[in-house]
Length: 80
Image (cartoon, rainbow, N blue to C red; front, side):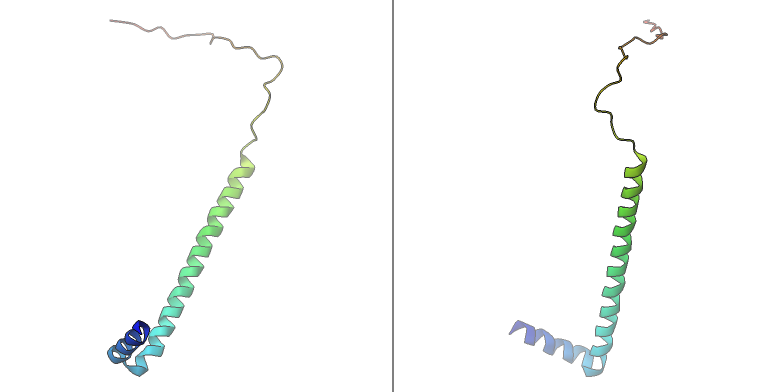
């Protein structure tokens, strides 16, 4: 019932000649929106793929001959 009422109001407001033009404009707007969202998602996926190939995988085991050493030079802190 509500749909019929809404369609009647639209028909009265815009007239029978304007409704196809409005529908065509609405369809082209939706088409452009879908195209833009697809381009954005493709760009995000391409950037994600590029970043994942440039980042080296983390090492699971430390190298064999490494020991924790203090830095050779430690800056002095002056307390006043």
